[in-house]
Image 1 (cartoon, one colour):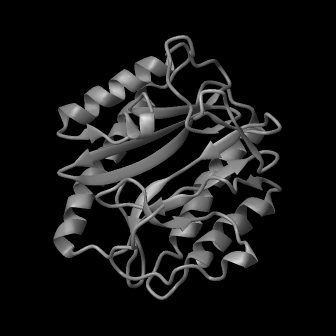
Image 2 (image 1 turned 60 degrees about the horizontal axis):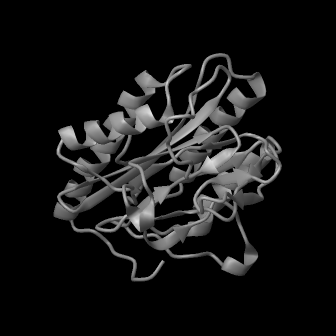
Length: 254
């Protein structure tokens, strides 16, 4: 992830609020469509249509060759699952939908993990805790803290439940590019030091990816699909936020 960390001006942050709001609205719309029998291809078509109807462009479509407007990651797929016509949601599945949109040159990025029908209690708990991990991490996204404070909050909560914290995929800065510096890990590695000191106006995509088993991953033959190495379920919860003086502002929750 090359380039420098940018602190956005008030007018730039306002543009990011618009993009973030559209991403949040798109995910709320998709949540209503998630049901047994719908294909991931249908969800992708609906997402693209919704984003374009509301004045945005899908960030993911053709990004480094990615062929769809959203990522649809089911059960053991952590992130970057590619929508297709053959894959239909089944009772008991969980599906992470990762969505990005560009409005007036600025990006929003967020993900939710949705339950499909009758999900096993231990998997429901995983999804719930992953969401909690985000909010505990976001509490640390304040001026004067460091990236390690976000990472520690996420990892500590996940490990209380014995979950694996994915290490090879991380959050990121965001702005006029979908991926900007800095990387935002969800785990603490002493070799990283404290990480960047946070400043008001920095914009981050914080995205805990938490697994029921190992943190290790494998990448599929398509070069995109990232799954847990042990085949156990994983959940993903992400929002774009602005670092604040005393609290962050989450842009993709509406």
